[in-house]
Image 1: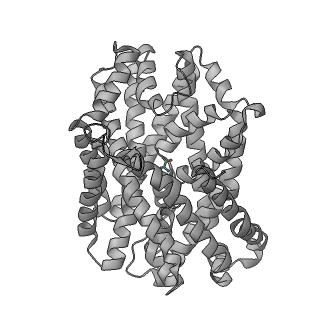
Image 2: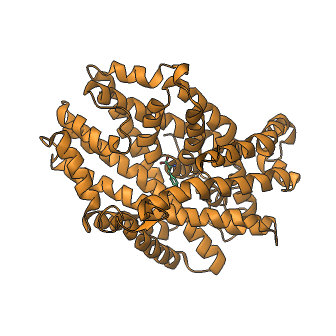
Image 3: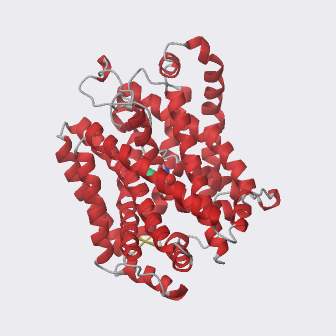
Length: 461
Ligand code: PHE
């Protein structure tokens, strides 16, 4: 990494507002949010389930045609508003209901973090187990057992969740530059290095070729309608869209930065890291005869099994779970930042105080989510336990609705001059063609796609 180019001092409209200190800091922070469990576990698994290479092509199209435009929308709203996810809308459209998009986004961030912190906590247990070599000799059944016994324990997963939340709270309370950005600048390069080492292992694994084939050989006969919808849903989740994260981060981006290339770079990095995860995971899965579509258990049950059997598995296992932990930590940071930015902008509370209060509140809700896997499993909301209820409600309802409101506002109501200014940075002529295509996507393609996925998810199609 050459010499880091620092951004100039805070420009006038951003007065009193923190901003990212450098381009690398900005990219690391936003990539940190985007890269998480979605890339390392979920992406490889759904690629396999929905037709390997064929699904991959569709996913890439979804990222390009829908994900990147929405990210750009969020950046523009945040950078023009220079406020949190709710108040940026309020500033751009006073006395209009568009800020509801931000309200849903902030609520989504709050609730997603409550259970994401629980899952991030599980990775700590897996780091501990890998370090003491606790998985060797457990066997498949022992592995399944260990996972379910751990997550349903009334105290242990709560302890790891509290540890994750405390780390998140401390980092966010320190501020954008000194906390959030600094953490990402250290964690993201670590994550990339670990990922590359894991990739080298994967290439050297005897019997791993079937894994590559599974991941990259397109078989369009396996592509289904569900696959297409899953591709869009995953693009949302993986790029951290619809929960105010990119609006909040957009408000810290200096006016001189090009939002288009920022959104492109982040999406590209997110996609590359997802592919690298697939390359790290599938050769091992195939070499050791694990079911590639084993779902949530893949990372926590199947992989320790693989590590226990392969040579160098001890190191591989430790590195893998450290990687998973780092990836989730940079995501929990971004979720908490959405809530903290709202509290500081709205109520003028001090950042530290806002961070402590929101960490406590989110952790409390999260404890119930954790207990839902054990002692509180019998407590049902609309037929699901608390954990699944929060997970499904936020992902299936909050995110698409929040994103839908913001693209409709952006495409049909936001002042075109603001859009031109934010996207072109003054070079209107150069960006004219791009803006036309972009606006077409935002006015028509993106809203229709969101509605279709939404109706499908709630079972109306
Ligand atoms: N984008 C993250 C991932 O791919 C998930 C995430 C969702 C992070 C929501 C923050 C907020 O895992």
